[in-house]
Length: 130
Image (cartoon, rainbow, N blue to C red; front, side):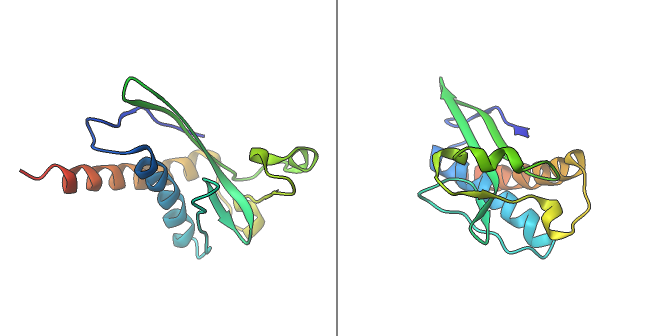
């Protein structure tokens, strides 16, 4: 889980832009691992072959975005078979270990967080030129 706290107003971010930055950061991380992933505008998160590997949930209060994303690294996905993940009937979940990638939650989280940080910084610089 990557938990963010960011002032979206100060950083000139819309909620959709922040969601896209989070999604694209995970997509870039997966691309570095030679895994093709994508997002769906109608169902936030990151997908591989119609399976969800990353869920995103934000709370906005007084211009601050809280919470963040949950990226599946190596876990028991069986509990997801008895619920409708993210409210979508039949949605299957994926995890990094499904693609024979060895990693830890800590290592994956650190790598994704670095990408998120770079993307937010780039967005800020591009939208605050004087």
